View 1 (cartoon, one colour):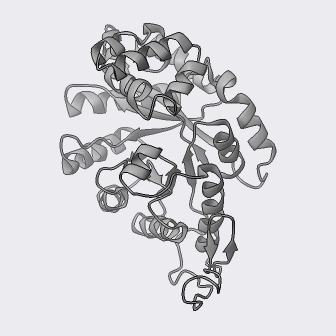
View 2 (cartoon, one colour):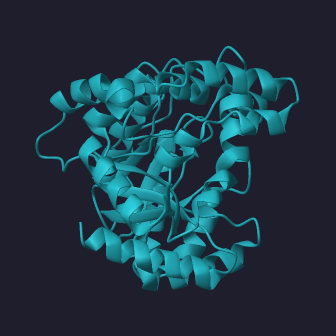
View 3 (cartoon, helix red, strand yellow):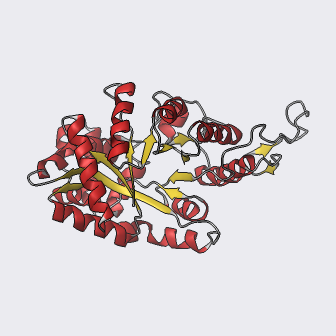
Length: 348
């Protein structure tokens, strides 16, 4: 299993990169660089490429509405070049509040758009003249639109790789099915081994049945917070604020993808209660309403035996790569947790 983590630079970006350098030596394989509506991810990815030697540098995620498909392909090819072939293009739809509220672009047809974007990106990386007349993207622009002077062009530079891995952050059934069919990696949210089959099993099976057999198996990333050792169980509570935010307040009441996943994972009553409390401004009560059982299933926090059992459960559910967050008050403690996890994973 590869071990990945989401880059957190709340304490400063350059400081975060120094920590990644230490984690890389301790066994970290991959870093997801977030964007949301913060600083852009590609700038940080380029900096990471210059400061690291081995880790895969993945966008986690680039929203598909804020860039053209060709620019997404160019960006990934550029970072792949800077990093000597260590880029992964992570794509996702984000949500209507960010896309329409921050970017001012209609949030429409996310699954169909990502399907077309994947096709266009791979065309660009193969250095083919880009010709794509889809429902959502027409390249070149048809003669009756614009100046009529557009012509098929191919990427000037020769990419390091002609097939850069693509990850998709997908939650809904159609999106997960498309991801299993076309993408190289899947980045789910609120994943628990026990509920994975009920929530995503049919969609994954349908997509994998249509998958090109020449493409490597889909890499599925999940895991949670990491604190391996005796007496660490209370650290599971550190995730309560973020979980409550996503389940309770991320998106509108009638359109919250994370709340839906939590509900379908066996916590329907709790999902409604958390959302009601959060939207009423009772955030602490919403956090308290998150079941302890969920926090245990959604983490790798506890004695080594417990964590080993969770790793086995994840693997049995289909997870073949980890997406984690190392807990500790100091860099040294977090690096130590990475070393312990690396050693544990290598013995499975």
